[in-house]
Length: 287
Image 1 (cartoon, helix red, strand yellow):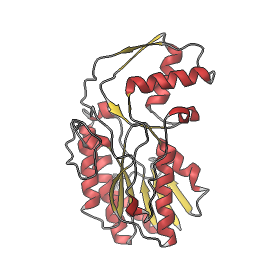
Image 2 (cartoon, helix red, strand yellow):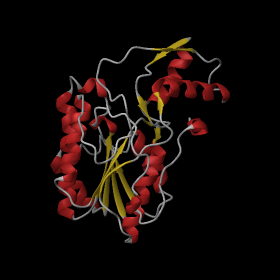
Image 3 (cartoon, helix red, strand yellow):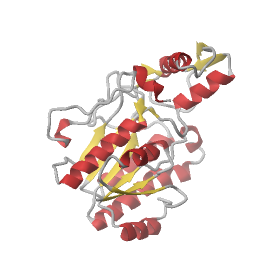
Image 4 (cartoon, one colour):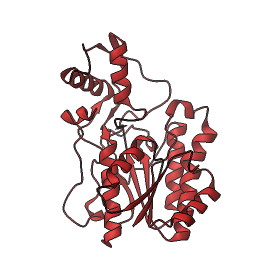
């Protein structure tokens, strides 16, 4: 089974490529320089050439602050790209696995978000990602949309790598504490996507639709930064732990509550198991 992976150079795309060897599939992974997902003719040509049995879209515009002034590109990548991929999948009669975000919500709900909750994005990034979801759901019947949050990995731009860098450069850090979410390792997201592809390949039942998938437990950015620095100190990655202060809320609106149901619904896999991968505690030492 041939699987086409877009956004191969990103943190999720990198993890997908690393793990693909453990799954019996032929992987064609392309980065932005090899495939611009905002170019529909390029997508159609590649799909016609590769003839994949499924597509995993790990490509996205994720610069939340910059999206406010760079909104044309944000919508082109996060809305138009998924639309063009969905059209290509519909034409080839193959499924699309697409990754979305907690930013489609306003974060005001006091309890974890469910898939049935009404989206209400508060910034351009969230609006563009919601439009991408709508493009997929209105174009395809066979799709999985995986909403996740607070993604980190050993590569790319993410909170863990930023905190580690700043902790080495500064004696004091200021981190917001008014946002709650569940740090989610990109490797876990990659694994669950590849497990779904396995089921497609094996002809097993998959219930198509939109699902939430995050790590556990929930925490704040400030507490997360504390855990990162403490473990980095234990592992000898830091000579000393910087002082930690609470900072003011960021200018660009972000969901104060990014908690979601932290497992895929069991009816995807037709068995009584929550595919929830723990990313707390010692999991941070993947860095």
